[in-house]
Image (cartoon, helix red, strand yellow):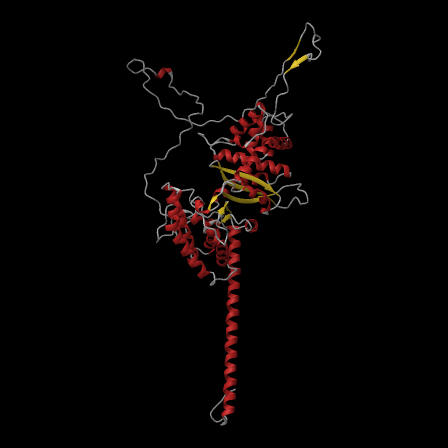
Length: 555
């Protein structure tokens, strides 16, 4: 209502009522304005989340999966992929003013073909001039003064041969064995031992087909087709069943490996999807999992693959009972315990990604440190840059995490001792981590929780205590890249053979991947290792032990 001087009452009480009424009305209007602005803010956040989700889906459908940018994109100012070179590769420290990884000046090697190994047999093929041209115009014969040679790589397809195992029979023609009835009339050598009993396939053949499948990702059905072209008729089921039979001889060694591995003080664990048919109580379309565990046995890196029907890490409960038996005091480990854990003794460290099943398993294991992965944290922000390359916050934190990796590269290049590495992390890495922590706490209250930035910050905050552990333990990697690299051969193979036909086959596959990947780590040809192992068992049948794991070349 409108008011003027003439319409106002002269009574003071009435005037006060009007003032109070108008004031309350103004307060209501302001409250409605606040509510409207809040509703508008929430609508804008929701719109932003939807647009963000649309962009992420576009990236999934049409974008590439690599986190590396091409040189053209770098030249155009798009953020580099600073971390994938990480500590396993030489990653120089980034400049403060640049988002791109600087390259050290160095003398470039001359380009040229790498020579073929000396152990390859050489066959000389002579290309000579005709005899008629070996006479000079003066009439004198030409003398050979030298030669030019070049090498070309040749290959002979796999040579198939048949082993004929002969066991001579012996008998006495004079008495025909009647002189001693306790002895056999005919003597013959005992049936020779086979790694796969009563199989028509030799140990060398089995080593070859197993290596083809688990090292070269060539499934049995393709091998069957290749053999058929050579005139050999073998069914896929024969190869599969024989491989399972061979694994029965190897399983004690795998079990010993598992026990010894969990005496290590530092493990990395990861898992990936596997489809297994004919699992009890499960549909054939349901998911199972292949777990990969990396640690040290006798100071040598060892990888163990393990099949489980579910993604729950509960199966590790019994295994962890052996973990870190060679434990040290906290001061010896140089580790500080987060979240109020006991500080008297530490069994060891398990490093994983952010999967919650590990948290459920390890939260009650007070003497086991659960470390996180900086690369997983960084990846969340890098995904934002795929959608919005100019996002300043994502650019900043990716660059800061990149500095942590640059410090690790410096430690690797300098071949620092554990004490020196720890000192470097405390003096340099800790400052960077502190900057990230301050930035995270400020930004997390400013962004929509369901936006990409909100989710990335939420993941970072949730993993924060685990991400700090590396600062106090120089042996700890920044990330789980090593064990993720161990998973890749399995993932490549899975694309070709798609599924395991039965749980026994999945278990055998895990065992073969374990042996073959460890042979690769040791610098040994997987085929040669398996062939020699099988032949050794046939000469001396025994319980295979951990001592027969692949040993690094030179040991």
